[in-house]
Figure (cartoon, rainbow, N blue to C red):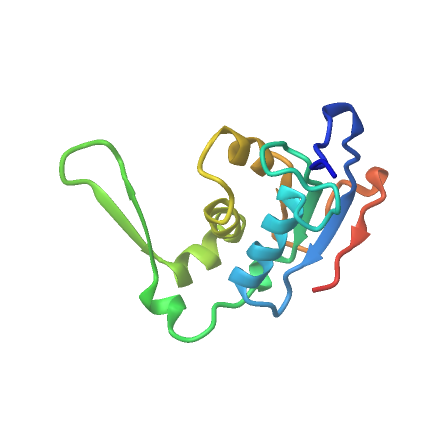
Length: 142
């Protein structure tokens, strides 16, 4: 018996909606990463981009458990000497919840060209409305 390898022309992509309201940020991001990679499909092939499209709504209503809102920091460097910027996740979730969710999903994907391409299929919205009704997305139950 030979190993099944998916071909590029056989890939079928679906659209899924994940509602993040009241759910932990990391759990939503982990489920989105599974859908983006295609690991939920029986035709999963590790070296191919066979995942689906994911829409995450209510990103601002996702919760951080424990003391992560006050203790966890987002750090980035501007490129200038001594300019390491730090922002608490409580402030980041209040100002840019879409960015915080994108960071969480990005951290759970591969750190290569394949992961970058998979992340382009993730759409994140602050509220409950999204503009992808024409694609007829299906609600994903966690």
